[in-house]
Length: 243
Image (cartoon, rainbow, N blue to C red; front, side, top):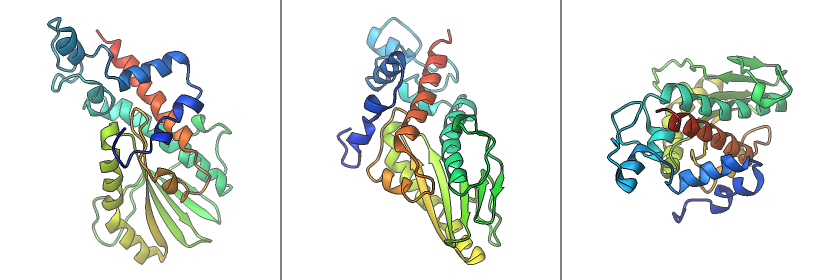
């Protein structure tokens, strides 16, 4: 929280406006304080002889950080689900902005199509962009082609450990630089990468709202943060209930 690139006001905003249930709020605060009964906590603090290794993967110490963002067993399921919920909210708002019909009026019931389009825009969901030159990083979460503005946005979402939010933001910006260049050349559109990064326990980097303001649809950082936190709370409850 004391790092100079952390937005302390936005990081703590969920405590004021997210409307989480008291038990969920308490769970997140306890996780931030590293005071949940993980195996590493029982081994190092309580010292009751518990094996400190993760109860799922058995490879790494079961700390809070490991549970919420570092377990290889949870990565393809729980972490992906949390990530996709944040991305779904953004996709739904962008579709509404361009007047593209969605299957539901509630973003959390939205099922993004691989391709959504009308005369104003085309929106790609989790789809590789084929280029003349071989580029490995060619699959952002969302690609928005705005025909009127002649611009293309490459949107990539991440919900990492709080300590990695700055690293992840920089990583996203550099990861798609080659793809930006190729799209500019192929589609004749001004292209920009927009990272959407929020910590698994709610931490936000300074400047993240500026990135969101580049996106069509008036993305609410408070709701992005709340969605990530609800996903993390679900992971913690599920993991800590496994005997």
